[in-house]
Image 1 (cartoon, rainbow, N blue to C red):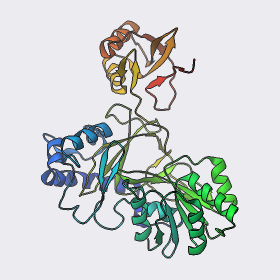
Image 2: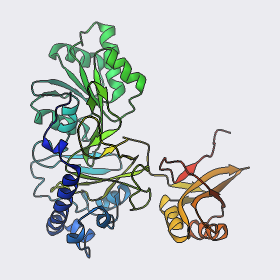
Image 3: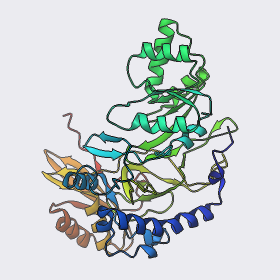
Image 4: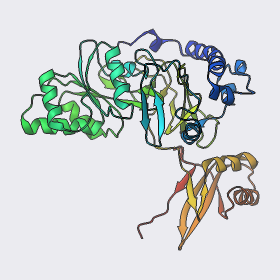
Length: 411
């Protein structure tokens, strides 16, 4: 389907960027006036001057350990939410624990756009086979389904026989949930003779959708689209189709500022380079500003053939949290970034951790020109308090990995 959810999806990219960064200073001033945690976090910052990506990148990235610490000190939300705006809403908890409030209003997690791209329309019956207990997964999708005028059957997870019977009885046209659980329902339907032929589309998230899995579903007449979402933010990006063909990557959701930064730092990477996905919401009740998802991705520079004009990313490409213990001490990507910044000529570096005999051994691979190996080795020891070798290289993989742990513990 090539029609669009609204006019925002085809907005001129420069106009979208301009409007987002016109909204941002006003939004930051508003939340710092109402929410004590944001007042403290933004203290001393001229929010009016944050008018583009370059100036915005001066703000530190808030990562999940930071959020958990703030919530632990001031439960449940670390003084980062407006309790008045959350009245009459819901509260969820993800492992950590991390507390996540639901903002008021329809489609608060912004999942309707991804569902619409997957083909969900008013009148559809949707089997929502994702958890509704404690974590917000089920609510994220349920709110979007109902905002579209579709009907949601909140089936949750488990009991594949009842799930298959529900599809048959309700003539459900869409499945939402994890990729593999759809296969389990279809397999059970075949086993018990349930008619699930009404299913013709699915929006999946929360697990790997292997090409063979997608192909198997398509052979049964089910077109599968992936969404990328987190419990903190909601829907961030989703796949699209054009003329019946799947487009590469995922289109970012509207009303978000999406950045890719070098893992362990606050610094955006060049377009196309793999790094950590950082997202800013305009959620007045529970704002998250430069929130590090911990997930890796990269921007695709070329516009999507589907006609949507927002930023396109490659989807989930692994985890950015590469903190690694070497000889009993943790080495963090942030430390590697400090080394890169302190040694002349270093453009990029990668710490490779392996074993040499029975001991941990690390090598700092550095890319650049005019680099002093001696200086680099000294800085490696000074920063990590560990000895390691240095290797000057002419290329490094574009995979976002800053610390590569190659140790084999099987022997």
